[in-house]
Picture (cartoon, rainbow, N blue to C red):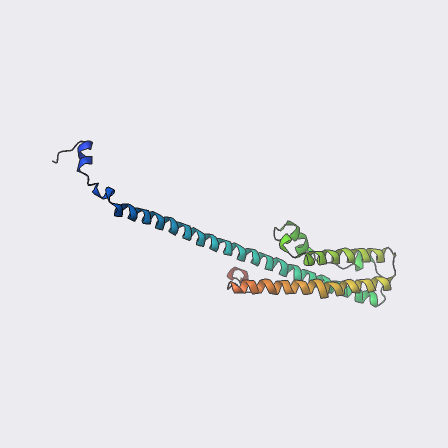
Length: 197
Protein backbone atom coordinates (compact mmCIF):
# COMPACT_ATOMS: atom_id res chain seq x y z
CA UNK A 1 0.00 0.00 0.00
CA UNK A 2 1.48 3.33 -1.02
CA UNK A 3 2.39 5.69 1.66
CA UNK A 4 0.31 8.91 1.71
CA UNK A 5 2.36 12.03 1.55
CA UNK A 6 1.46 15.11 3.47
CA UNK A 7 0.08 17.99 1.36
CA UNK A 8 3.29 20.05 1.48
CA UNK A 9 5.29 17.14 0.17
CA UNK A 10 2.73 16.49 -2.60
CA UNK A 11 2.86 20.16 -3.72
CA UNK A 12 6.68 20.04 -3.83
CA UNK A 13 6.50 17.02 -6.15
CA UNK A 14 4.32 18.93 -8.71
CA UNK A 15 6.15 20.14 -11.77
CA UNK A 16 5.41 23.88 -12.02
CA UNK A 17 8.31 24.68 -14.28
CA UNK A 18 5.96 25.64 -17.18
CA UNK A 19 4.47 28.49 -15.13
CA UNK A 20 7.61 30.54 -15.41
CA UNK A 21 7.91 30.10 -19.18
CA UNK A 22 6.55 32.87 -21.47
CA UNK A 23 5.18 30.41 -24.01
CA UNK A 24 2.78 28.97 -21.46
CA UNK A 25 1.32 32.39 -20.64
CA UNK A 26 1.06 33.43 -24.29
CA UNK A 27 -0.79 30.19 -25.05
CA UNK A 28 -3.17 30.78 -22.15
CA UNK A 29 -3.87 34.37 -23.26
CA UNK A 30 -4.61 33.23 -26.83
CA UNK A 31 -6.87 30.48 -25.54
CA UNK A 32 -8.76 33.00 -23.40
CA UNK A 33 -9.09 35.45 -26.33
CA UNK A 34 -10.25 32.67 -28.66
CA UNK A 35 -12.87 31.53 -26.14
CA UNK A 36 -14.17 35.06 -25.60
CA UNK A 37 -14.25 35.74 -29.35
CA UNK A 38 -16.07 32.47 -30.01
CA UNK A 39 -18.69 33.18 -27.36
CA UNK A 40 -19.14 36.73 -28.69
CA UNK A 41 -19.54 35.62 -32.32
CA UNK A 42 -21.92 32.82 -31.38
CA UNK A 43 -24.07 35.16 -29.31
CA UNK A 44 -24.12 37.74 -32.13
CA UNK A 45 -25.25 35.11 -34.63
CA UNK A 46 -27.85 33.81 -32.20
CA UNK A 47 -29.17 37.30 -31.59
CA UNK A 48 -29.26 37.98 -35.32
CA UNK A 49 -31.22 34.78 -35.94
CA UNK A 50 -33.64 35.57 -33.11
CA UNK A 51 -34.27 39.06 -34.47
CA UNK A 52 -34.83 37.72 -37.99
CA UNK A 53 -37.25 35.12 -36.65
CA UNK A 54 -39.13 37.82 -34.72
CA UNK A 55 -39.28 40.04 -37.83
CA UNK A 56 -40.69 37.18 -39.90
CA UNK A 57 -43.33 36.37 -37.28
CA UNK A 58 -44.34 40.03 -37.05
CA UNK A 59 -44.60 40.32 -40.84
CA UNK A 60 -46.68 37.14 -41.04
CA UNK A 61 -49.04 38.39 -38.32
CA UNK A 62 -49.38 41.74 -40.09
CA UNK A 63 -49.98 40.07 -43.45
CA UNK A 64 -52.78 37.85 -42.13
CA UNK A 65 -54.37 40.69 -40.15
CA UNK A 66 -54.36 43.05 -43.12
CA UNK A 67 -55.51 40.36 -45.52
CA UNK A 68 -58.48 39.64 -43.27
CA UNK A 69 -59.19 43.36 -43.04
CA UNK A 70 -58.97 43.65 -46.83
CA UNK A 71 -61.48 40.85 -47.33
CA UNK A 72 -63.88 42.27 -44.76
CA UNK A 73 -63.53 45.82 -46.12
CA UNK A 74 -64.05 44.66 -49.71
CA UNK A 75 -67.21 42.82 -48.67
CA UNK A 76 -68.47 45.96 -46.93
CA UNK A 77 -67.86 48.10 -50.01
CA UNK A 78 -69.84 45.56 -52.05
CA UNK A 79 -72.69 45.74 -49.52
CA UNK A 80 -72.66 49.52 -49.78
CA UNK A 81 -72.81 49.25 -53.58
CA UNK A 82 -75.87 47.02 -53.23
CA UNK A 83 -77.51 49.65 -51.01
CA UNK A 84 -76.67 52.35 -53.56
CA UNK A 85 -78.26 50.25 -56.32
CA UNK A 86 -81.32 49.75 -54.09
CA UNK A 87 -81.62 53.54 -53.63
CA UNK A 88 -81.03 54.20 -57.35
CA UNK A 89 -84.04 51.98 -58.12
CA UNK A 90 -86.23 54.43 -56.17
CA UNK A 91 -87.00 52.20 -53.20
CA UNK A 92 -87.90 53.82 -49.90
CA UNK A 93 -85.14 53.43 -47.32
CA UNK A 94 -85.99 52.18 -43.83
CA UNK A 95 -82.97 51.92 -41.54
CA UNK A 96 -84.40 49.00 -39.60
CA UNK A 97 -84.68 46.71 -42.60
CA UNK A 98 -82.58 48.28 -45.36
CA UNK A 99 -79.38 49.35 -43.60
CA UNK A 100 -76.48 47.25 -44.85
CA UNK A 101 -75.19 44.77 -42.31
CA UNK A 102 -71.48 45.49 -42.44
CA UNK A 103 -69.07 42.87 -41.19
CA UNK A 104 -66.90 44.39 -38.49
CA UNK A 105 -65.43 41.34 -36.76
CA UNK A 106 -61.88 41.96 -37.96
CA UNK A 107 -62.20 45.74 -37.60
CA UNK A 108 -63.42 45.35 -33.99
CA UNK A 109 -60.85 42.64 -33.16
CA UNK A 110 -58.06 44.94 -34.34
CA UNK A 111 -58.70 47.13 -31.30
CA UNK A 112 -57.14 44.41 -29.18
CA UNK A 113 -54.32 43.40 -31.50
CA UNK A 114 -50.80 44.66 -30.80
CA UNK A 115 -50.23 44.64 -34.59
CA UNK A 116 -52.95 47.21 -35.32
CA UNK A 117 -50.70 50.21 -34.74
CA UNK A 118 -48.17 48.72 -37.17
CA UNK A 119 -50.81 49.08 -39.90
CA UNK A 120 -50.16 52.16 -42.06
CA UNK A 121 -52.29 55.18 -41.18
CA UNK A 122 -53.92 55.50 -44.63
CA UNK A 123 -55.44 52.04 -44.17
CA UNK A 124 -56.75 52.63 -40.66
CA UNK A 125 -57.97 56.12 -41.50
CA UNK A 126 -59.62 54.99 -44.73
CA UNK A 127 -61.55 52.15 -43.08
CA UNK A 128 -62.56 54.33 -40.13
CA UNK A 129 -63.77 57.13 -42.40
CA UNK A 130 -65.70 54.68 -44.57
CA UNK A 131 -67.70 53.36 -41.61
CA UNK A 132 -68.17 56.80 -40.10
CA UNK A 133 -69.30 58.50 -43.32
CA UNK A 134 -71.62 55.69 -44.38
CA UNK A 135 -73.26 55.54 -40.94
CA UNK A 136 -73.70 59.33 -40.94
CA UNK A 137 -75.15 59.47 -44.46
CA UNK A 138 -77.55 56.59 -43.86
CA UNK A 139 -78.70 58.18 -40.59
CA UNK A 140 -79.36 61.46 -42.48
CA UNK A 141 -81.33 59.53 -45.11
CA UNK A 142 -83.37 57.71 -42.48
CA UNK A 143 -84.14 60.96 -40.60
CA UNK A 144 -84.86 62.66 -43.95
CA UNK A 145 -82.30 65.40 -43.28
CA UNK A 146 -81.11 65.08 -46.88
CA UNK A 147 -82.75 63.76 -50.03
CA UNK A 148 -82.18 60.32 -51.47
CA UNK A 149 -80.43 61.52 -54.64
CA UNK A 150 -77.93 63.66 -52.70
CA UNK A 151 -77.26 60.84 -50.21
CA UNK A 152 -76.85 58.37 -53.08
CA UNK A 153 -74.29 60.63 -54.77
CA UNK A 154 -72.34 61.00 -51.53
CA UNK A 155 -72.48 57.25 -50.85
CA UNK A 156 -71.16 56.61 -54.36
CA UNK A 157 -68.28 59.02 -53.66
CA UNK A 158 -67.51 57.21 -50.38
CA UNK A 159 -67.62 53.84 -52.16
CA UNK A 160 -65.39 55.05 -54.98
CA UNK A 161 -62.84 56.56 -52.59
CA UNK A 162 -62.81 53.42 -50.44
CA UNK A 163 -62.33 51.15 -53.46
CA UNK A 164 -59.82 53.29 -55.38
CA UNK A 165 -57.76 54.65 -52.50
CA UNK A 166 -58.00 52.63 -49.29
CA UNK A 167 -58.52 49.20 -50.84
CA UNK A 168 -55.84 49.85 -53.48
CA UNK A 169 -53.37 50.98 -50.80
CA UNK A 170 -54.21 47.91 -48.73
CA UNK A 171 -53.62 45.63 -51.73
CA UNK A 172 -50.25 47.28 -52.46
CA UNK A 173 -49.26 46.94 -48.80
CA UNK A 174 -50.11 43.22 -48.84
CA UNK A 175 -48.04 42.70 -51.99
CA UNK A 176 -45.11 44.50 -50.35
CA UNK A 177 -45.27 42.37 -47.19
CA UNK A 178 -45.61 39.21 -49.26
CA UNK A 179 -42.49 40.09 -51.28
CA UNK A 180 -40.48 40.74 -48.12
CA UNK A 181 -41.57 37.40 -46.70
CA UNK A 182 -40.71 35.64 -49.95
CA UNK A 183 -37.19 37.05 -49.64
CA UNK A 184 -36.99 35.01 -46.40
CA UNK A 185 -38.41 31.96 -48.26
CA UNK A 186 -41.73 32.24 -46.42
CA UNK A 187 -44.84 31.67 -48.53
CA UNK A 188 -47.75 33.14 -46.58
CA UNK A 189 -50.31 31.69 -48.98
CA UNK A 190 -49.11 28.15 -48.36
CA UNK A 191 -51.78 26.18 -46.53
CA UNK A 192 -50.40 24.76 -43.33
CA UNK A 193 -51.07 21.10 -42.57
CA UNK A 194 -53.30 21.89 -39.58
CA UNK A 195 -55.34 24.39 -41.65
CA UNK A 196 -56.06 21.90 -44.43
CA UNK A 197 -58.01 19.52 -42.19
